[in-house]
Image (cartoon, rainbow, N blue to C red; front, side, top):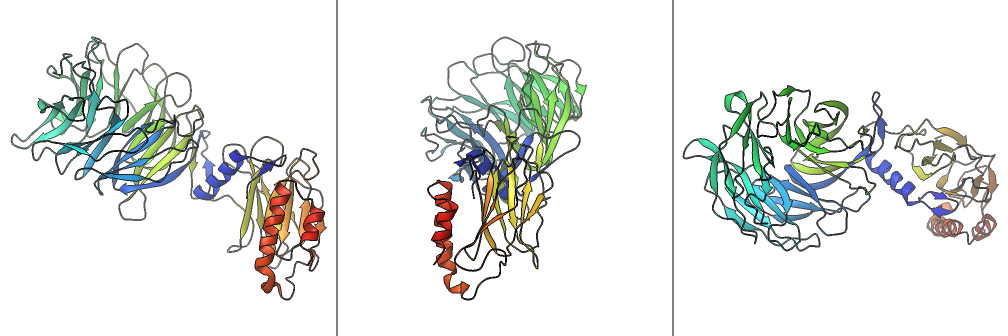
Length: 540
C-alpha cells in the first residue's frame, strides 16, 4: 500500500518502501556515517566487464551501457530518473567484448556505442538512433591475435571526428602496442598505426599533460616493474615517444584528472598519485592507500575531485583534499568489475553504477546502482533485515508515511502473532533508509488483512485503518509522535473485531469480501466514504 500525508499520495514514501522491499534494508556503518542509499541490482548479460554512462535518449536522465564478455553483447539500460533502470536491451557485438565507451562517431549529434572485442580482434560501433536504441554493429577488424582490451577516445588530429587508441597484442613480435585508429566520421576508422606500449599494458587514458592544447595518451604497463607512460600528441593523429615514470602498480585501472587544482593533468593508479608538472612529466609518485581506481567525481559537493575504486567485491570512495591526496570515506559491497558515475536519481548528487556477477555461481551479470547523498559516505546494502516483530512465516502488511511529524518516512507494519492478538509496529525512519526499533500497538483481532494510512479527523496527524477478514475495521487515531489513541472498532456484518475468530462460512465469502474491502479502502483514500459508509458496505 502507499503512504499518505493529509490524504494525498506521497510518491517519495512509496519509492522508499519499494526500495526497502527490494533491497531488504540498509544499515549504517559506524564510523563513519553513511551516505549512499542502498543499491539496487539490474540484470545484464553474462560476465559483464565494462560500463559507460550517458544520456542516450535525450531525456536528460543518465543511461547505462554494459559490455558482457560471456554473452558477446552489450546491455543498454535506460534510466528512469529515480535511481532505477529499465530492463536491459541487448545488442550483439564481436566475440568476448572487453570494454565499452560512448561517443558520437558519425557526427549526427546522436550518441553511439563503441566496443573492443578480444577473441574476434575487432572493434564494434553501434550507431545510435537518438531514442536509446541502436543499429546493428559496424565492424572494424584488427590483425588476428590482437586481442584488443582497454581503449581511449578523443579527437587526436583536431578534425572534429572521434579517434581511438586501443591496447593490443602484436603476436608476430611477441610485444604489445597502442593501435591508433583515426576516425572517418561515419563510424569507421582508418588503418591502425601502432606505438610500442611497454609490456602487458592494463590501462589507457587521454589528457593534455604538457599544456599545448593537443591530446596526449597515457598508459600503465609492466615495464621495469610498472610504469606510467605519456605519449605527447602532435595534433595530427600521431604521437611522440613515451615519457616514462616508474611506479610499482601494474595490472590496474587508471584515472586522469586535476587532483591538486594547479591546472595540470594528474594520474591516479592503485597505490600511487602522480601529480603533473605541466610539461608531460610528473613529480615523484606519492604512495597512496588507493585501491584500483576507475571512476572520478565530486561525491561530497566540495568542488574537489574524489575517486571511486573497486577490488571486485567492494566499492570504496576516496575523498580528495585538494592537495593531491585522498582519504577513505566509505565502502559498500557490490560486484565491481567496472565503475561509472552519473546522477541516476536526478537529485543533483552523483551516484555510482558498478557491474559484476550476480553471485550464487554461474556467470549472470548485474548492474548495481548506489544512490549518493552528496556527502561522500555511504549507507550500504546489507543482508541484515529491518527487525519487525511477529511470528516467522506469517504475513506482513506494510505502509509508509510520516507518523511522527519529522518529515521523514516511517514504516507501519501489520504483523500476525500466533496464539496472540495482531500488532501494529511503527518503525521511525531517519530519512536515510535506516529505521529505529519498532513502537508496538496491539489490536483486538487475530485476522487482520490490510493496513492503510490517512488523516481521518483532519488534525494534521496520520491515522491508521486496519481491516480484518471478517469485514471489521479498527481505527487508530495518531498522536503525531508515532503512537496512537486507544483503538476504535467498527464491526462489519459478522462478529465484532474484539474476537477476531473467523465466522462460520467465511471461506465461501472470502473472495467477495476481498473485493468489497478493496473498494472500501479506495473510497476511504479518496475521501468519498467515511468509516460509517464502509461499515454499512460490509453489512450483508
